Amino acid sequence: MAHPKRKISKTRRDKRRTHDKAVAPTLAICPNCGAAYKYHTVCGECGQYRGKQAIEEVEA
Image: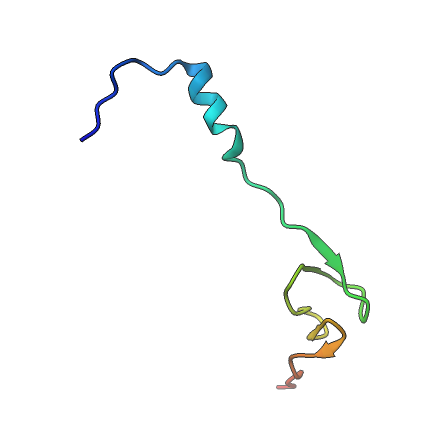
């Protein structure tokens, strides 16, 4: 197993961890229904993707 030769300072450790934060996903507005959805996914409200119907709405 690897064993460190010297103690890593808090500053050096925290510099490494600056990129380990959560980022909110980028949202787009659906041109068909106006709902917000994640990029490169099907709209959850109307079921369209890039102007084409991807999911048929099923009524229960």
